[in-house]
Image (cartoon, rainbow, N blue to C red; front, side, top):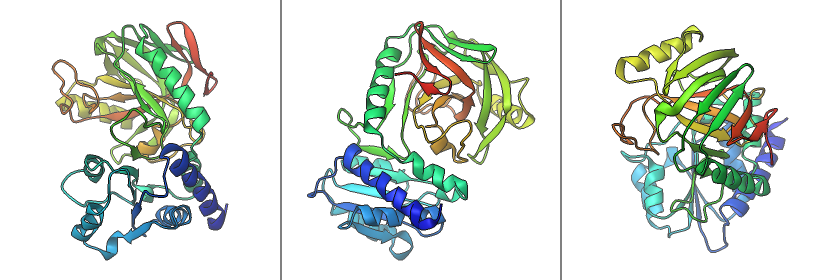
Length: 335
């Protein structure tokens, strides 16, 4: 697809995000902060210009951080700030998205777009499509099931990974912010996630088809087996690169299996990968995190800030069964 067609598709998708997820009103201002380093950054900026004809647009290379923050200071709650980044902007010492949320500003953040080129560009643009009538009922239904679940089984070809006990409160990332303090976040979206309340109740085996490397890029592999005993991962059958990651984690902390993520984004999957892990974790299917770090859930002996490692791995799941009900099969969620 040529660049003009990609920008047109991105405009259509982002316009739907602004309308259906963020419910943008004519009275609400928009500030887009962008750079021009990566091709995809330039395309998304062009798409936002078409979607937001009255928006303010600031090339980060042309203004100081102080001047940009002064622009933000003039915004009122429920206005929107959009960050289109080839890497990751550093406008203050903290994550800037958190500062925007403190000001009650809606926020859309695109990061590390330089990691995407060639066919990845179209995949990313497709992943921005907001299917309100798909994400919202499916995400809510999965949350209801997971919040009351006593047993979840993730099946792969010849393996089962079992969560034998209650789960933490399920978090939603489905573009529905009606009951949330913060409006927005990192895009693309499409995910529900939780973890076991007692990590030791996770046992069994699973097959992994991809994982994030040290550079936060996704590596695809022929599916390999991992084993979990009382919540701790063993990867003796894994490729050398994955075993090296596990060995490095072991030096500082247990290789715990924490996040259980169900990605809903139909633009991505086993046969349509994106190298950026922050995007690909929304792929339609199952991902887990390994390592002690998880900012959303505290555990006895594991505060939200404890732990250094949170490595996403992607499971070659054939079925997901919640309290005996099959909710995922043949690469898609059942509705």
